[in-house]
Length: 160
View 1 (tube, one colour):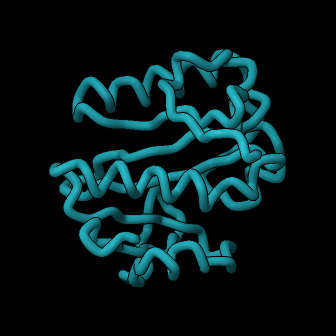
View 2 (cartoon, rainbow, N blue to C red; view 1 turned 90 degrees about the horizontal axis):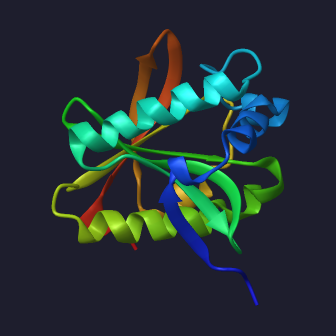
């Protein structure tokens, strides 16, 4: 039996786990804006910033759990008028991406605030099958904080 995927607030995860996760060089390979190792202070500041999104927008990033264990983080963040979805898994949980994404898209479809979702992916990401299967369409390339990203858009009414 496959463990259930659960979403919880990042405040429920030990900052040590988040710092270890974000310090793994395999995570940094596909995160051009991630520079340097994280410590507990960095992780706490990150959680505080993500909680501010919840306070401002009523939605934000979660911690993802599988079988009760932390496997990564991600969620929806308001970027101007768009809801961008991000997903950052621990390397030992990379295979859970499609399941986490599907659960998040089910959430987005049920939330009237989210008529569509955007995804920003570094050009180093070559496997885009999950987005293809969902029906996301390329929206070109964008610059975000000095790094190039591939942008995709998915109308939530079209998400399967």
